[in-house]
Image 1 (tube, helix red, strand yellow):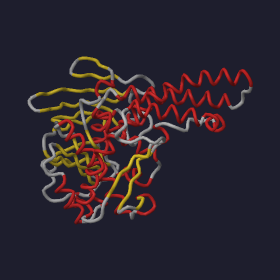
Image 2: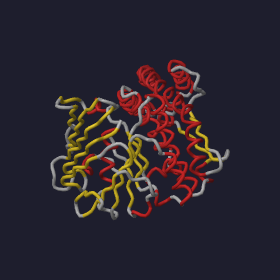
Image 3: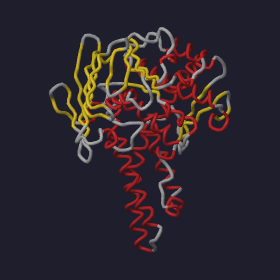
Image 4: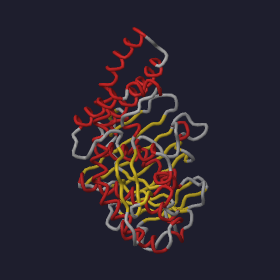
Length: 373
């Protein structure tokens, strides 16, 4: 799969931008703050319906505009499709597949993209939340229907936590009645959580050898490993129903502790993806260069999972990656992405882009996107 055209209206800093794309590598260069990252962010937003740089959609709309529009034409083999997304702050976004209006969630799985961005260093050095999101975003590109499960789980866990906090202040019959209501939420949280944890365990098993291979390819030495740390004794051999049963058992055994803490202590929201290099935890032990290579390997591993499962390449986005890589790692990354159907690269300095990694080249600056002369 690849994009043939990308058009933005009032997205971030771009009043209007129309870019012709195609298979192979497209490179965008320009000074920082000129909008090159905004172009590839729009592509990633079409794929995931979220931004790594903004917590709210308001930040995606150019200052003074009422809405932003992202439109792209996709080619998958002999088939083509046009996808559009209107981002309207304070309102539900509007999505279109061709001329048909659809729910935004219906666009998940239509455009697939894996983006490496400088903020991905937090996958290695940051809190578990980012690593959980990494797994869930990958899962959504493979199985878009999981979006409903994730949304329902988030809602149930919030409501269950509110009830736990209330129970901490109750006694006698009121407390017993409250616990009866809690058991209903237990069942829902365990069923949804079991599906999510089982999915994450399966993805981690797939990612393990792929992340290790990518890290070896980039670093030239050493080993990388990923291990999913579930909140209960679940393994990749457990079906979703098995994980659900284990979560229910943990909730029952830990009821007093959960009420005392006023928090849900078991489930996907308490879990983590553990990363290690050479058998040591990456967080706290890895150097800056090792952390950078591991973060990139995580994205390349995700790319390889999608390629293997769907027999189709997602778009690979490399945002400002080469500035942090030495010459050996730049050459290694160039070799690793060889043969990828479509790669979008951004760089502030043109000389940072390895020779041969540009089939088409654009310069971004002064509010315009121009073919490089």
